[in-house]
Length: 122
Ligand SMILES: [Ca+2]
Image (cartoon, rainbow, N blue to C red; front, side, top):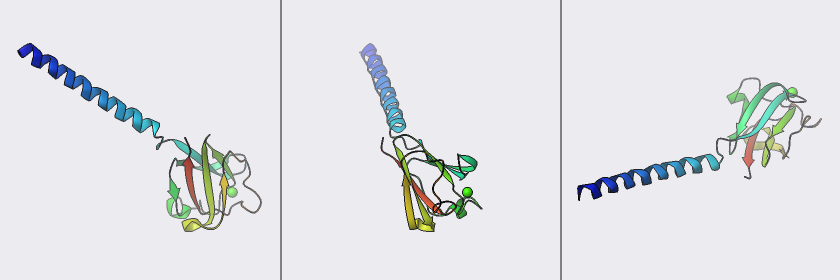
């Protein structure tokens, strides 16, 4: 009788441990903490930079980092991710979506962006 309850206890402990393990694996695979894109001050991925995580949106660069507004010249994008950059704060004005790393955002886009959203498909 006592031996049975000890075995039962061990089985319950093992089951709880396995559940914790799978929760941790799920947290990792949902990719929420994964790097999505890096925004750079200068062309060719140089200068000050801002790292964005999967699912992150920034409605106002200036409020986050002083002097980062109207600043971005190149973007590094993680595989399977895309970053959308907006001319004005709160996702206003024109927007551009970058699905891959871009050493020069473009003449019209250079030093224009003020807000951003970043997502990964997988
Ligand atoms: Ca710049």
